[in-house]
Length: 254
Image: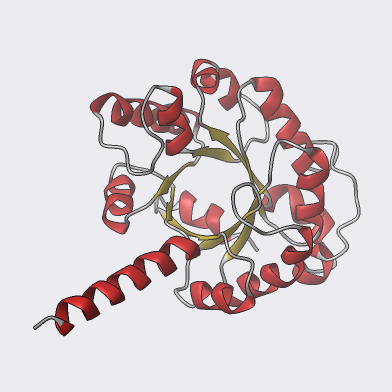
């Protein structure tokens, strides 16, 4: 059901697409690229709960693992996203071991967690035995993107049931006095990102990174990241439109 765990067990890097625009057409266009997983962004993207009901089936049909970045560390948002079929949850601004425990508890059924049972669509998407398999399939990702999270990283990684860590480089750089954007090149930021990845590796946990450029993502995959996100549907649309118009203007001036 969740191919990400197989990819990681083989020591490979998974590719993650990113949906910021809750549109059937744009989601199908993005999914056509055949990502290993696709995340619907409910924090900074424009999707809401009702959008999940038609975006998740598109992701599932493509063969990608459906994931959701929830707006915040909120049990209700997490459980509702899982109940409609998400197999991975990315929770922003996890700063302490207590935060990580809350995340895991919301993602896993008892006795491993405290998730309430009611997989209203997940059962239809993943089969009648979903409840028995869910804890082994759902991946709770803790976003590491603040100084407090870095300071408490070792304790966060000790959380039983944590599925992995996802680095938010924009907010992480913001916290250390830099302008927020992806694809960090500052030596101290690269060292910090590597430190987080290495800490995850020591605990046997996947580490993901949000990237803006495919070449940068490939570089990070080569350095050992388990998952790399490459831009988003909105950024692909913007970049494609800019490139097309720039090419047209250059050609029409000849």
